[in-house]
Image (cartoon, rainbow, N blue to C red; front, side):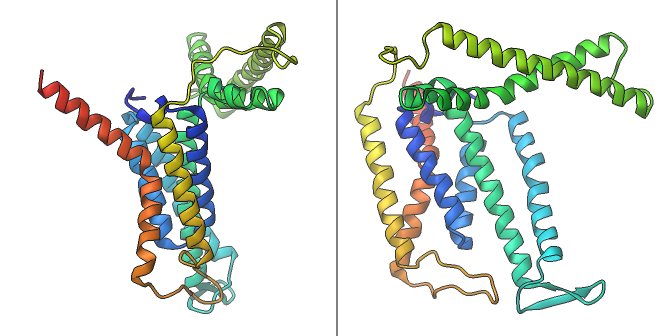
Length: 298
């Protein structure tokens, strides 16, 4: 990961509010224009702060999701009035179902990218800081879950390499031999996961985690920049809720495509939504430009 995501320096509460709003509106707003704004904002925010391997992983994961969603939905959902063709025993493939599948795929990928950014910014210590006193058990479980995937991946690679050095290559040999090796690796990983969870729970218990009256040290303090960004997020939330109530983002797929005719008074709501989704991207761009100006003046 590139160490230039400025948003990570902001207060955990501001981080949490921002991602709650972007993920929530990405799930609620189904208008293609709003989905496009959310997708490209999330995508470019991720590309700006990611390495080549992370970007390759994202495309390997997201492209099949888009393709399968657009392909499978028309096959299993024949709803819609505009029939494009018939397959099999007269089963219709409709335009509305096809577009709905594409919309669902875009929504899934957008939320996936937001959660990737969320997992990067909201570290386990931020989770414990926010929810440790309110729900100690839940915050501990969530923080462990967020950190489990990267640790599991790293440990899995180490176990695979260890098995390979013993002549048990998971990519070589007969199918039975590979399945046997895979079973041994999974057995090791399950044991490691259980031991890791028990060790973490015992460690937190021995430190008095969750006890009433327990004090906690934290380096997080609400600064002026945090307050301004929080106010900005809340302002965008209010304006977007007004836009939803005014049916600015309405879009209907079934039985026919339907949406309100566009008018100039709707444009500010889309601009606000773009400004909200691209907030982290603007912050990173501003930081990069400022650093380049300072560096060029040396």
